[in-house]
Length: 526
Ligand code: ADP
Ligand code: ZN
Image (cartoon, rainbow, N blue to C red):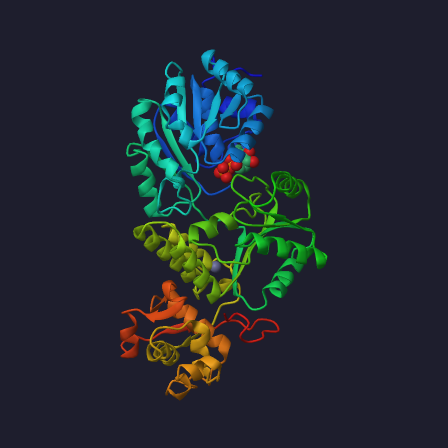
């Protein structure tokens, strides 16, 4: 045990060497550390894997007193504390699962100033009991990890983070830091305001993850497509994300049947099985972990070679964070996703059925649309992702699907008019599936019942295949010309912007979808 106390070595570099065994700071780590050691506040916006933990841990060991670290998840705290103890640093986590003895040990560590880092949940941090506990304790700094959780603009808002705005007044003069790997410009502003960090120095590095190859394809036969993808990754470990627990279980079972070793992970599993599967993933060389988003935060496995999405995430931030779990070691890795109109409808329904207030639902819809825009872009995906985070990139990265196999575009003005006319003529009451039946002249029970088979639009689009119409509707949605009405079961509606297209004041270009192998038409409809 080092027992850093009042005699703490003040020099960050010697702490880095003696405690962690690292030769040098990376990137802007040193600048952050110096700012905080000198007593200043800091906002640290580094992508996953850049080394944010050291940014507060090293100052914690350089400044007298205990460092308080706010972290949203108990499991995450546990891992960090364990890692620190391995290094001989005195660290503990204060949470509701503590035994009397553990709690007593923390109190003693605070009283005799031998504790270097104390991890605390945000809800605990704001209590009077905690304040009282800290009344006579010297505090080295306060670090707020996963700081995007404070913002409703972030993709993972946690109301308990809101109480952290009081820290500035409760612990005056103590340097504070906010750290996050995902923050678009709007969220950044919000973090600074909500946490009263107006005087903080802001440290950012590029969010580009050049070793990750991005690929987003239209969902056709998802299991086949996944299997094709995984055959490129024999011998690798990776994550397959699904939206629902049931789908996680089914997919893992199916993969095992196909000779691919896969394990499930979701919050509905019992703790033991979940931990066992996580441990297997961390240890084994060739394992596919099929998971809901419950898996990932704080997981530090450097050689994750791929992240596959079978369902669309809810925002660009979520997509970026989830795909960012690939390739922390800097070696080539793949982010791969299948998606279709059904995802957009499903995600939209989740937003509408959620219990957020209307203002937030609007934000969530906008976030979903931003991701849809990235899915439907005919330009460089990396450029589009980075642009979302306010970062300029010249494009043409050469390491995303649209750069590697440039997509062709076509003048879709006529098709757009037909597709939107079908929406208009049928009263803005139907989803893409039925509208495509109408356009392609497919007689069904519904086209009969609603008299759509007698309309001029019926069959007006029979020159194009069903798949193209699906693509047209997705791209109209991404372009903001139409919208999904979730209260009307996913009915498509026209936006005011559609008018200019009807009047031919505005032309529309669509990306040409690539032919998918063995593509049976209509499989993505529903
Ligand atoms: P983040 O929280 O930003 O995702 P971590 O703090 O988990 O990143 O660090 C990612 C990995 O990089 C960890 O394994 C960490 O030990 C390592 N690391 C961080 N800083 C350095 C450094 N200066 N030299 C060598 N390795 C480092
Ligand atoms: Zn590119």
